[in-house]
Image (cartoon, rainbow, N blue to C red):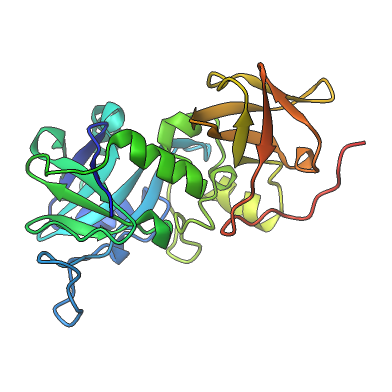
Length: 288
């Protein structure tokens, strides 16, 4: 029942009476879904579990910029994000504040982010919620300082790769990746009913017109792990690129027409796509 401290994760704090409405008009998912533990619910540990929301911030052109889990804590919303992106994300969100009664700040120095999976109990006195992407992903918890852990960040990385979960800028390319290429629809990262948000037009058009041509796909790696960005070749033709990986598993961006069983070469390794049960791949015609 592993629990890992994730030092590469940071936290943004969003306060003010307009905090929910402010984020609602900017991010891809329904921010109102983030909430504290319900008094009527059976607590899963001394602190109980709230509800988190998985969402992204897109460019006006609909391309991915950053992603985060949104947790509620009293009169503030906390965004569990990449620590390296926290300052940039706070700056971008602040630019859109206008007349909204809201404040955004990088609170990464005040929180330690933890992940637990495999039935691990939630530590007491934390701000915690199930990971909204997949039940098997476990839970996230924010604490004032790192808690005792029996797993490493590398263990969490192996777990999320085994689940086929893309993770932020390790797998998505800012200003380039289209949201649905990264499984946001299946991973509950986009709302189709909440109303407008920045980049919505391209996201909706991609879904309803069936324009998706590539996906971030989990792969087994036979051979030396290719560096991120290494081209993936099928029959000598480039069909994608390697993203993150570890210990014989990885994520690669692949054209849908390359998922037909052909040998995929990447550097000195051979990649074998392994489509997880949660991933929906549209019908496709193989390349001859």
